[in-house]
Amino acid sequence: MEHNDSTILIVDDEPDFLRLLKRLIQSELECEIFTALSGYEAIEILKDHHIDVAFVDIKMPGMDGFEFLDYVRENYPWLTVIMITAYGCIEVAVKAIKKGAYDFITKPVEQDVFFLSLKKAMERTKLLSENLRLRRSVQVQEAFKNVVGRSVAMQKVFEIVKMVAPTDMTVLLRGESGTGKDLIARTIHELSTRKDGPYVAVNCPTVPEQILESELFGYKKGAFTHATSNKKGLFQEANGGTIFLDEIGDIQPSLQTKLLRVLQEKEIKPLGDTKTVKVDVRVIASTNQNLEEKMRQGSFREDLFYRLNVVPIEIPPLRQRKEDIPLLVEHFLEKYSRELNKTRKRVSPELMEMFFHYDWKGNVRELENVIVRGILFAIDEEIQPQHVGFHGKSENGVWCTKVDFSLPYRDAKEEVLKEFHHRFIGNLLERTSGNISQAARLCGIERQALQHLIKRYKIDVNAYRN
Image: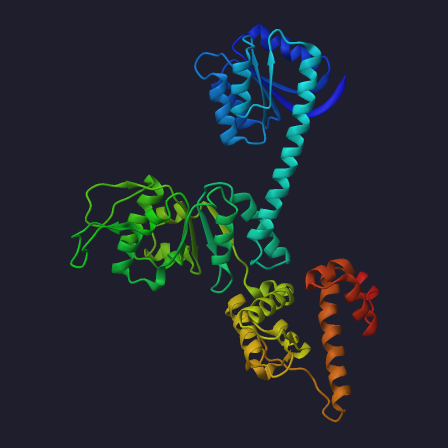
């Protein structure tokens, strides 16, 4: 008996035929087989199990084979369906193929014909599944193209994003200002089944309280003095897609109550209207505030918090993922050199060292602004601290490189570079226990280039392996 990892579903309203076909497959293949006496029962099996090939009878009471085929094409495009019928006329066969069936066999089943069709069907499913996997991989890479980070902290964020994105669950993004919560929100949308629908972002603190309600929920003509016509709210604009409520902690209690209704009932009531409107919207919210503390103070509703906090994602501040700084610097240099039509520049070792000792209260956004200033104001190809007005204050005060001003320029610069590389690469090797490949990945350069620097500056890798 040949072993096969495929899972097969047989759908027929005749119990005897189900047992016969199952025994026939088991006589040749060792694989998992599910059976269903109706299309409705088969759908329940599809919801709970991954099926590769389905044999489906055409004439069944209730949901017939063609209706089941339509459902499969809509919801499980990789599944290969072979239609079975005792009424083997050419018109039925043509209709089955046109509706998306892969093949068509008749009762009584001829064993050789059956297994030839099954073999080809399993090969087709395998190819389709691989194709879908590759397309999904490309989609993920494209969605994450603006979210830069190889640190362990960011990899954890990416994993949660990839798991939650295909669902419709509400997500609460938490983290300091400037950590990139808006980019994560858009990435979730791009990886979701709603990616072809609208994505509407609302910056809650920038809209006055009395206007925010009408912006979110819309209004009817005559609802207030200047309401001269009906206006759709942003929830209606986002119908079929995603709405991102940025800095949700700033909305007032009166509006929190109405937002809770949207999350609970999936409906809104425009200002001045007596009727509610159903909306199909996925909600992603963000905050840089301590919502638990706001709940204790009574300024944020507890029931709204738990409706928003279905899947919380904590975005780490830049000071907790400093190994991402070189990658972010390269990303911003590439992006803004192109956008500002400026020559591609590089960050000096002195400035890069300062970056590693800086607190980054403004997080990634602050680093981004520094790089933009450097591209605009640097005189030559290298961005120096003075070009961006960067003083590199650290938690312990002002950091600066020790420079021996009695040395000639080139010798002094070489001493600074040596100190920088020993501290920077040493920090990487310490974190990776002397693993050069891992250290290269962390700092975003090729392994060979890192080995060259280690050799040039005589860094003892073995000291970090003990």
